[in-house]
Length: 209
Image (cartoon, rainbow, N blue to C red; front, side):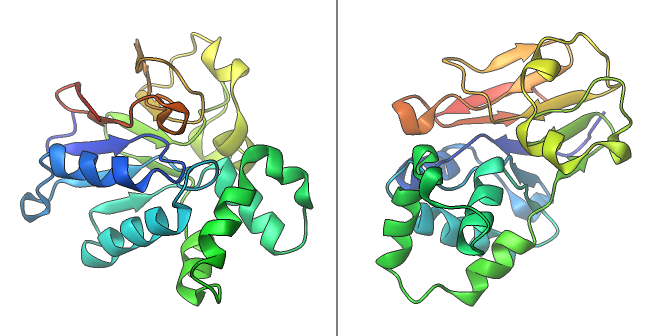
């Protein structure tokens, strides 16, 4: 078992107000070496992607060993967009909202480029694997591809494969947290009018705003 408390936060998608409310509600205590894991998709579709990134960057700066920032597929798409590897077809995924947020705070901060480049693909503990989208059944953790970490959906959700640990993930929105044997899905559609959800994993306690 993971002895110390670990809090995992689902997809924020630019909803900074909900994120601030959630952080006030969860009773995370870094002074007790409790961990905070964000499952990715901080940006796009919501009104304040810039503010969300600033908030999680500040948390990471204050508690670098206790805060894990995972990469979501929306961060990867945004990196591709600003590097010129993708075009405005990405507006369908909400990048226009992100660009408006950054244009209000131009020029583009170097610290934010470092943020996007330093995001992690997974966090594994004794009892849990934290990842944005999920894992490919039958493939060892260290052999999973970045694309699967960021994008996989049906092959993961429809499988009953036992990864040996509970996989805590975001990416796929549910009306309510998706909790079943070996799976915990925490994207509850905050940007679509749903809740922003956090799981305190050792107790199985769900906190939403």
